[in-house]
Image (tube, rainbow, N blue to C red; front, side, top):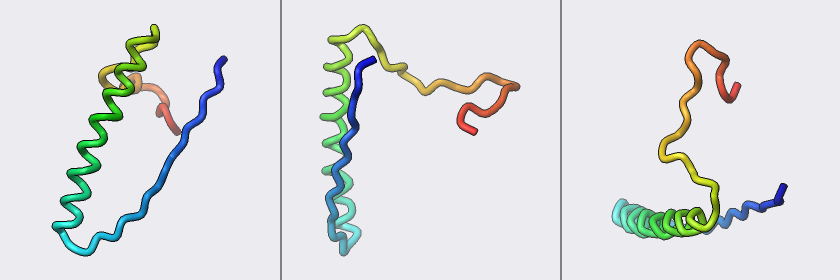
Length: 66
C-alpha cells in the first residue's frame, strides 16, 4: 500500500464588506476548477476512477458513518 499525505494550507483574509466577500468567493470558486482539472488529469494516468456521484448507503442497514 502506498503512503500518501494530505497538506492543507490556510490563508486568512480580512473581509470587511459584502463586496470583499463576493470577490473572494469568485476567486476561490475559479481556483477550484483548476484543482478539479488536476484531479482529472491525475486520474487519467491511473486505473482508479472516482465515482461521479457519492455512494448512497444501503437501505435498511446501519449508517455508513455512525
